[in-house]
Image (cartoon, rainbow, N blue to C red; front, side):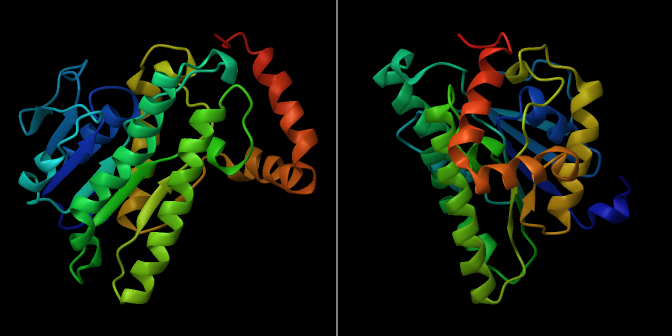
Length: 248
């Protein structure tokens, strides 16, 4: 990615930027500007000197930290968690934490930056959703629900932004399983996540509103099958996950 493709960026906030895709995004953005990583833990790889770390837990009651991080023109939120498990094995505490981190926390962060999104000045924003937010996802019921909430939230805000007259948009990044991340059951591997992060940042800088990786190759057909018969496709998803060896 060239400096010209990124434009006049100077400072970014990456929430969940200490590992996985978030870390890769932070490293891509650091090529052309300053970056603040906001996460519970320090980055699990060496980062350049123009990357700052701020410790924050999305389960916190106080989100005023983001009021002190307003001198930015890019916001990327990749924080989130989930695990493959039948709903009967998900505790009430885990359910609440997952909805707070994956959905409510993200909405609260966006609220702190919404004036920038409404502004006529360029502000770039991307949020990590999931293809699980587009269809029923057995073994991922709560996780899928949290990402479905984000999907509707982002789509609704993008209409409001359009009607307000601004060109700013929120990019919903909704992948399936991503190689090179612990979320997929593997170890974090920047050789896989950096190319993905490059594409993510490129699309965000173009102010796109939806990015489903491998859409044409995989998910266009999957979503068509789901629209035609959501019960059968849901049962297929159940069997696929059960046979993946990742169900806990």
